[in-house]
Length: 303
Figure 1: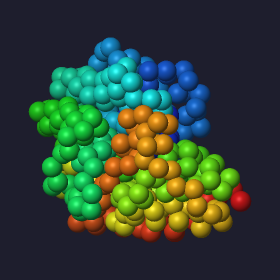
Figure 2 (figure 1 turned 120 degrees about the horizontal axis):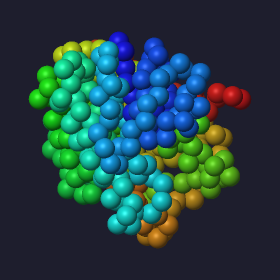
Figure 3 (figure 1 turned 90 degrees about the horizontal axis):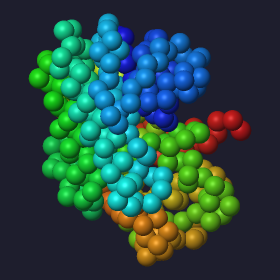
């Protein structure tokens, strides 16, 4: 399986690259990407995804595309400019990718295109599998448009899987890297009421499911990339405190969170109880189903 990857220098992308055999990487900063990924034997080509479709030559001999690129939603306040970058880096870039795919004489067999559980919006205690309807907030609208752009590749006979990723936990990056410091200082606590659901996944299962999506021809359309056992924010807080041996007695009120991070607080306070129905129905075996197990493995590395 010869793969092409976008977003290869990100937290998920760099973990995926380590599982692939000499992949091709498309990057808007090819020299920097080549330095960071040198040990993986990648071939790096430039793509200014803000302004142009990717080069046709990049897809020669490619069987599968893992399209993971996109502006971070958790860095910086959500002003109008930031929200435009979040949307454009996903929707417009995916449209331009598909534009090239639709003119290839021999297109890849599979496009595994990133999305997020933000697709569902905040839904309280409702259990959400891949058949659930989209939400109506900013991220839900972005995810819906993002997925629709990716599905345009079906016109070229390409199987498309839109992978809706939850909160990815792993060492050295992702959401956990931002959470650990205040908890280590004994300042950790629930966010808001703590009753909102958090659908999480260990980085090993994230990568495993990306490969599972590529390798199983019966999978197409939406696929949730989350553990089968989501937890509430209150329980997540307690688990992380236990794993670090620290108290979790400093809750962050919703109003304080909104003052601190602006509109992004809606994401942190939103509730998404997502289940990986497609993954389970197609036989994927999770390495980390329970949060305590995942946190213990992640936080014990390097001790």
